[in-house]
Image (cartoon, rainbow, N blue to C red):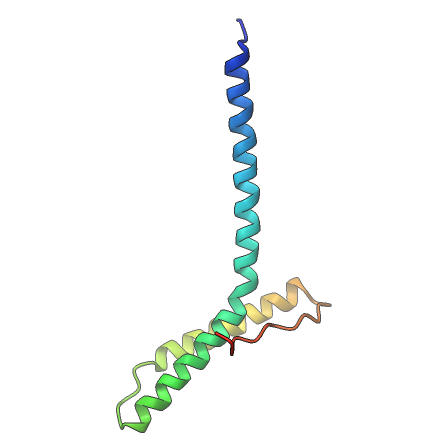
Length: 98
């Protein structure tokens, strides 16, 4: 079997590009994981605001189930965060600026 230079270079380039893509995807995934808790906190604040608005105009709340599920998911994520980063005293960024 004869190994040709162009074919070998193509294979190496493809391998290298795949490694770069995979590493960038992992970095992006980690970044999104860090943003889950602040996002859910912001979502919860928004849902509660919607509920207050609905109550102020005497409508039945359409977001009660969403509030409960968001609170549950937020509690789970905070618990996971404490397990993953037990000694971390990181401050969660405020979502009030959004």
